[in-house]
Image (cartoon, rainbow, N blue to C red; front, side, top):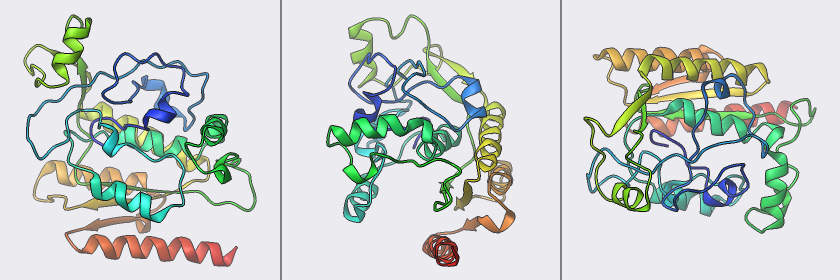
Length: 267
């Protein structure tokens, strides 16, 4: 994820949203969306504009990541998942709130009718047609692993008058957004973090276990301390939060995998 999270064009096509452009497939969440884990086909959305604040060639264009970095909604294909991770490139800003919203939604049964449609279309394996199961399903435990290398940042979108015509939409798909007057701030960093923590609480209230990983956080900087504090608060417990550097990240993921496997064996 970057500032936004792209759930993929196929899933986007099953939402209650009009497609304005074909460059990416993110939606704009209202503030109230972060008080619940659910997303359904009945929820009305608007499509998030496709723009970038940098022309750095090492980054994939877009505050909303393009399709190469889109989510894979449901999969047990390890090779496909690893290939997607390998193909991902850097993105601007850190919309942890938006990332967790999609992660939680993928575990909330409200999205199951959409998964059934995706399975019928061959977009996901037919075995996932009835997923996600109910929260009170006795044979199921639900987990989220949330990783970031930074803190929640401000979230912006294109200002009125800059995304109204096909020409303007096409221009912003290649030309960097004017960062002086071409945008407006939807949330500042404090508000973004508040949305994240509200959603963390709502997610844990549904019985979902959250592991968080802070990767290469600069703890000499205030933002690093803030990021670590928010991630520890978001996690199911302090023991579910990992602060790691470089190759330690593999150790963290292995530890999480062992913990989940232990839960599975005990059940």
